[in-house]
Length: 491
Image (cartoon, one colour):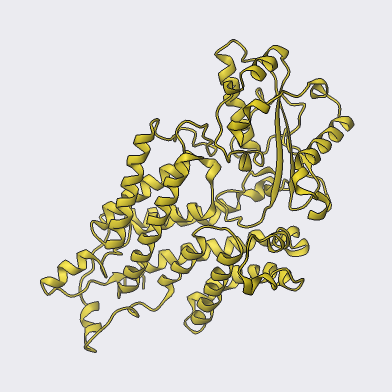
């Protein structure tokens, strides 16, 4: 039963581990203050969320980071747990939606898990609150079973949709980008270096990753198979942490296994009767009426089940190429892209003006081009910002053309955006794939054809020149703009 009282100790251990990792995440965000989250650089937004912006001053963002860190510490300690969880969720979510360029699936997962924790009594065990209760002789409080269940459901959804996303030609047949990552893993441990580059290890990783994502979450739900699933998943996350650079996600994946463990396994008892006595104690509930709580959780999980499937609406467009529907869908570890990006202005006066004053362009974070040139929506946002700046000088009608090429999972470079389209006048309605994003043709997948990788600019230039020669138009006669002086802006 959902309201059956169960031991809260596992939830308490989970809260402690989660709070510690959130402290690490807060520190990571603070380090990003000098890069993508710096208040002086141009910030990209998610469709429909352009109204969420960073605080305008660095000191205000520093204060927000301090609040986030204190909230994470209080969560771990179990002191003022729910207010602390609210503060952490709000501040972390604000940072997340203030810079779409920094999107990562594990950041999104952090928001969802923290949101669910708001509705639990995770401070009923191993907390300062429980310690205070123990001093007056009060028995430990249990929690209703659904406090564990909502966390389990979230974990199952993430793994399941991660598996669904892997059912595609690149992953299962070409086994890319897994093969590329394994063969170019930076400084793997000595005991793995000779293994991960062997031919048999690539299909084991690709197909094994699919089966782990697909079956292990459900094996966790059954008592007979739970231990096997935990062993597999801990090994899986441990191996990933050694091979791939994916931040704290492996640690988060291991911590998320705690709610699946039998409730009470971390509780020490001196008397057999304590089990019964404890479960007879009344448990506290979130400060919301039961009907409202049910509606919130039902809507939350319906969204989690349906929203990741939206990329099917734009088939045959490939979300890995267009990036439309790629985010918030648990489409993880599917892409290795290399991109080139160049802006050209049809107006000779504007072109000369910007060559003389490269600082006129909106300032980008040093690492912005690593993600910006792979996402048409980000490119479009940046062009709109340039148009806004030009409008202040009576040049809002200046045609702006973008010469952008990408290589997706080892394919030859191909134009991402139609260079003949004036992107300053183009539109990008939310939930659509605009026709100025060129469809990706059927190209051979092989990273060797991109060698040497350091010549990616030449490869990209040759690809777009070939496309324009075969498809002449307005951009054919526009000369490039000399941005050499502005390299400090984009890295």
